[in-house]
Each structure stands twice: as structure tokens, then as C-alpha cells.
Length: 448
Image (cartoon, rainbow, N blue to C red; front, side, top):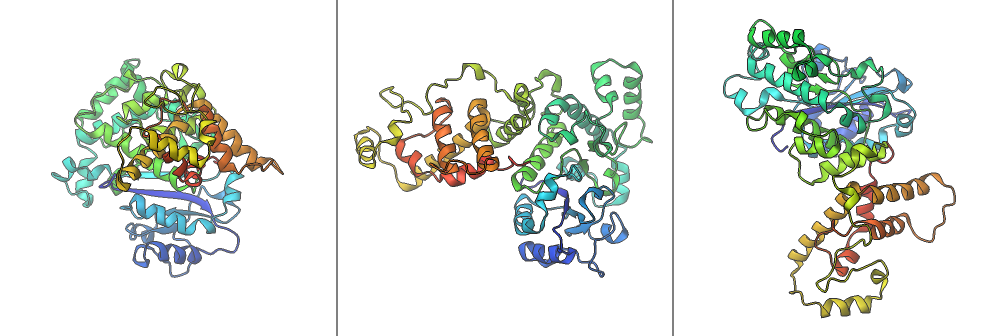
């Protein structure tokens, strides 16, 4: 993602009394005034007006026709076209207090759109100048770009049930939301050989230099409508959100899908060889057991698509103990972890483990932290227990406060997380983890 060219659009309501310039000023303090567009009137810039298009390398506060449900306070926050993950994080964290998050929970209005710069892939840049309108007009008629367009639509259409499981009900392909229409069925029909007419149309499209991309897809969940203007493909299905992790993970996911369809070594992989599950989608994308796969599983579980979220071989996982075994092959259970500090120190001294310096131990704690976060997302029983505790603290008045939320969630992890998941475990590392930070990371996005 370091060299990825992408932009985002966030359709959100401002709090009562917050002006567009209040938002711009706060944004300027976070990322620099030279990266923020100000209008002469102080109001929103017209969506795709000349002023809007002349400032595509700046963040804009724009109007949009889809914001009617935000009680007159809706705006579209449009990033510059070459933003970065770090910049989006700074921008969102600095301005989050100006967004009416409560109103966002009560309406299905708005969305989170991602633009991926497909015309800036290196193989294209060697032949065409993606900044030149004449070159863009030529590019959308080349077979290379048409093959990419078809592949993206085929992959998105095939994995549509999995993608739906990551999103709120209002944004799934089974609804009649005209802002996120599903991919045309002709793409999958021609891939499966179920429609001779569609297959013929595809072949004529690929050979005819007078036809431009896209073939059947425009302004749906995948939008190639502006590829000759901006050199990007737009992914439009995600619901409105102002969670940093959610925004960034959706960007990563859509960029990974796009690049997978483009790169020569992977572009011919058939998506139909993979199951319609989180693991099948992640395997197609070439993801390891990383946080993006875990985020997808957590989202699918959150929206109650447990069959899609279920890990391969989950029924074989060992749920008896929540921690790895020691060298003497004896399990460490929750009772052992409640022993006194003296016992912990004594136990560590008696272990036949080489002493570690601070740097090495810090790395090991980092691996343990990551394995806990991934483990909660990947193990359905642990995930559901954690989510239930979080909901109790959120929903139940006067919840018994014998422990804090962090303590209760930590205890649920100790009792339920399979022993096969944790890496670099020792008692002292477990006790020295920043559990408040781990719980915040695990529960981020639960409110969506």
C-alpha cells in the first residue's frame, strides 16, 4: 500500500452549529492548510463542479445528492487523489469530534467510497501518461484495461455474498439501494459459460478499439464511469462510517482486490476455485493469517454471518485451554495466571529459557499481542463472548462493576482462546501487555 494511489469519500453529517470552515480549519491543523480547499463563500464546493475538479489534489468539503437523510447537515469529505493511510488517519482523528456520530447510527444515509488509481500501475505508466486526458481516452480502449475491468467485475460478482457479509443490511446487494447496485449478472454468466450472447459481447468488446471500458458496469458497487477522467475505479458499496480502522481496512481490501486482478502472476487465477467464505476470499487475495483477514472475519461475525466467517477446521480447534503449553507439556490455565507476583517471578527463574534483552522481549510481546487480536477475530466462540461482554457494558444500566470491561474481556479471552493460536507466550509477557489498548483494538467498529 505504500505506493498506492487512492482517494476516499466519506458522506457524513456535521454536528449542529459546526460550519464547513470549522471542519476545514480543524483539518488544516492536522494535515496542513496547503492540502485543504477553502471556498470563497465558506460553504460546500459543488460536487464535480469546475472548482471541485480544479482542486482534486486537495481535501474538499463537498455537496452531494445522496445526503438528504442527514437533516440538512450532510457533507461529503473528499480526500485528495493521492492521499495516504497515515494522512487519512490524522484527518479523521482530528475531525471526529465535529461529526454527528449519533445521527449516523440512526440513518442508513451516506456511504464510504474508495477510488483506486488503476491507471497509475507501473506497466501502464511506461506507455501512457495517466495525467494526460488524451492518453486516458486511449487507455480505456486498450485490451489490457478492458481485461482488468472485466476481471474486477467477475471477482467482485463471484465474492458478492462474502462482501455483503462485511457490510450493514442497507448496503447489501440483496437490497434495492440504487446507490450500490450489484454487478451486472452478465459478467458472471459469461465467465461460467451460461450465456452465449454475453460471451459474444465480451469478445467483441475486447477486440473493438472503438468501445471503451466498462462493458456492462457503471455507477454500481463497482464504478468505472470516471476512469477516463480520473484514471480510477471506484468501489461504492460500503456504508457511511467514521471509524479509522474500518475506513483503512476497506481501502486495503479494495486495493488488494484491484491489484490481484492486475498483476501478471495472479490475474489469471480463477475465483471460482475458492469457497464463498472469508477464508476463501482471503485466500484468493493472497492474504496470510493477517489482520485484514481477521478484520473480515470479525465483521462477518458481527453481522451474524457465522457460516461465512467460520475458519477452516474450526470444529477441530482446542477450546480446553486458553494458553500455549510449556516445555513440560503442562497447560497454563486461568487459575495459574492468578498466582501471586512472587510465584510468577519464581516460575520464570526456574524456566530453562535463555535470558532475553529488552528489544527481543519487546518483539515477542508484540507477536503475542498480534496473536491475541487475530485469535479473537478468528475464533468464533471467543469473538462472541467478547462481543456479548461489550454489549452488556454498552446496553445494560448499572452493569455489575466487580471488574472493568477490560478485565472481563481479558478473562473471556483467557478462558476461551484456543491454545494453538498464541505465539511467544510466557506468563510475564501476558501480564505486561497493555490490555486497555488490546481491548480498544478488538472492539473498534463494534458500534457499526
